[in-house]
Structure formats: structure tokens, C-alpha cells
Length: 83
Length: 419
Image 1 (tube, each protein chain N blue to C red):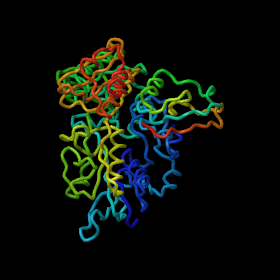
Image 2 (cartoon, chains in turn orange, purple; image 1 turned 30 degrees about the vertical axis):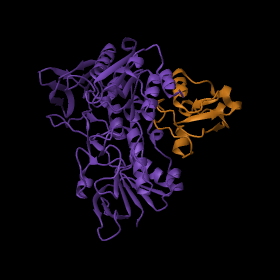
Image 3 (tube, each protein chain N blue to C red; image 1 turned 180 degrees about the horizontal axis):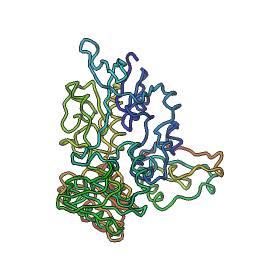
Image 4 (cartoon, each protein chain N blue to C red; image 1 turned 135 degrees about the horizontal axis):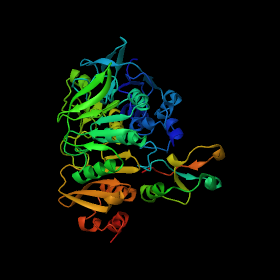
């Protein structure tokens, strides 16, 4: 999220700066990367459940995805709208 | 520069305003000028991760240099606007700004996003080395530097800044005393039971919390702080004092322009000042309560800065949209996540869900049976449900909300289901 926002990637807002308080950094992780990215944590799960318009199995809050070597080439899709 | 938009103040509101101007299709020059000697950066981490040493300065930047360049947003740092003048003979809203570098910046549109400055202590010893405020990154860095060798820390002020600082400092094993002048903590923003919860939460973790306690003077030796003496005579040893006693909006430039100020620059729901061609956003403003349209509130939060800046940009771009977002806020202290939505003013009833003793609960504020706000501690589902309810105008009746076993989400869905 931080990288996306600082570089102006449209569609990822990150209003709370990565504090699990807004859910405006919602993305759909490309299926090929899902296992590597991992499932959401408990608080993130709560936020996804109520905070986003169209939750899917591939939903993650991008502020909780830490960029690492293993995620090289990561593809995410932005939802139609952020909350 | 000649013409274009001038945004005075380059922090959260200023940056968002510049970004939103482009989003709304504004194509003229945009100049964003800030007094600090660094590019715009985030404030909330200064009392959290940055203070704790888990985030560095580079991580705080709000946008990359390339971001501004791509959008033709000219960011001027280490430059302060000292004079503003509107040009009555020219197009409404245009004028010139003089900076402390002696430059004159002409503008067609003006936005004030100058924020607020920390209220200073006016006491003997307040200028001693080791007495610190917390508003800008240099402040936080200074506190960090003093913190490492410190043993006893006194935090003056039991609001969010004071308590977040106390939490970081206590987590590093220092002796911490919080000195609060009012009868309870965070008195301006939360109900007494939330104040009580935080007093207990901090005390439980080893912090000494003192209410109705005022500082008489700060003691020092060789120019450095050694202790804090309270008006009741108590002397608290201190190697470091952090002061968080509120902020004072910067209204000097607005006053120069003859704009109405009342505890901040007065703006309407379109972020327009009393001179409608000039807008203001963020911590420097007071505005009508966004949910009721009544009164004047100052919403000291980054979510407000962002929302109000968007509204201000829309106004300047000629596509006015009123401020309708539900105000929200968060505070992180230890493992306690506080999430606030709505505005509590005028509440006459509280509903408690969950268990404060397990540090997982929420308090819903009502007025005449109408939901106003929520303070949720480690209860994100409640927070989100109330935020949604407030945004959509969906009622969450008191008697139903009081049943902790039923998730508020269910009440929301029931209420919005077609009959």
C-alpha cells in the first residue's frame, strides 16, 4: 500500500496510512500469488468483512502485505471502488 | 510563479488538496509551500511507530518526488509565507504571497492548510533542555534521542498525544508519569467511562496517572531538566518531559486577509472561508458538525484533513461538493486499538457492548435515541458497522445495539433489507 500510494497508483487510497482503520487499500490478489501472500490476519479479516464493498476469496488489505523477494512480480487487481 | 493555485502549508491537508485539484481536472499551475525543511510527510506515526523506532523518516514521506513532478505540483520546502494579499482590482480570489525568502508568489486561487502549532507551557523551566513537544518529525527525533538514556519520563497532558507517547515510553521500560490537569484523561473527546478505561489500562501497565494535577514549575540543573513540581508540592523526577497540551490553529495569515476566525479559520461545508474564493482545510479550521450541520467543531485528525482538503479542492475547481464524510479517528496505545466514528457532542445515552475488563468493547453514543458515534477498543466489527450506519443514515436502535451477542452487522443488514 505504502509504495502504491506514494507513487500515485490510482485505486489504492490508504487513508489511515496502514493502520487497519479504513479498508481503502483493498485489493484482489492474483490467484497465482495467493498462497505466497497468505491469508488475512484477524483484525484485517474483520475490516474486510464489513469494510469493503465486494469481498472475494482473494481479498486482502494491501497495507498488510509486506513486499518481499518471494512476492516478486506480484499482481493485484483494484476493486471498482474503495469504501 | 504567476497565476495558478497556491496552497499554503504542505502537510496532510495541503498534499491532499494538491492531489485532488488534479483529480478534479484543474490544469493550471499548483504550488504547495511548506515551512519545514523537508518534503511533506505523515504525522500520525510520530507518536507511534516512528517514536518507537520501528519506522524511519524515509518511510514517512507522503508521496515520492516523481509523484509531484508527474502532476506538475511544485513543492517548495523550507519556505514560509509571511504576507498574503488579495487583489481587489483583479479576478476574485487572486492575489500575491510574500515568503521569508523575499519571493513574491502570485496566485489565482488560494488555499490555507497551515495547521496548528503545539500550545506551549508558560512556566518556569519550560525552556530547559529535555522538555519536548511533539508535532513535527524533528520533535519526535529529539524525544527519541533523549529517551534512550532516560529513566524517568513525565508526560504533561493526558490527551491522545500524551497517552500514545506514554505507551511507547512505558513499553521501553521507562518510569512514566502522566500529569493531566482535568479530572479525567482525553476529556475533550470521550465519555468518562472511556477516560476511566484508559486510566486503568495505563495504570495496569505500570504508568502513574495523575488527574487534577497541574505543573507549577520544571526543575533543572546545568540547563537540563531534572524534575517536575506539581502545584500540590509533589516533585516528580524527570530526565525527559514530553508536553502534549493541545494545539493552537495558525490563523495569522487568515487574519491578515480579514477572514473570520473563531478558534480556527471559520469555513463552511464547502471549505470556503468568509471570503468564499479562499478555502481552508485541516487542523487550522473550524467547521459546522458534518453530521448535523450545527455549531463549530475542530476535527483534529488526518482523516478530516484529507476529507476537507478534497472538499476544498472541489470548490476551487468549480465542482463544489459538501463535506459529508462521517468523521473518524484512531489511536494506538500498546495493544489497544481505539477506533472512533462520528461526533459525540450532545450525547445523552451510552450503550456498552463487550467487556472493558477484557479490553475488547465499544461504547455507542446516542442523543434522543439517535446514534451519534462510537468509541471502539479492539472491536473493529462494531466500529465499521457504526461507521456504515452513520454514513447511510441507518438507525441502530438502543435496545437492539445493547445486545452484545448480536453483531451490529446483523442489525445493519436487517435494517437495510427490503421489506
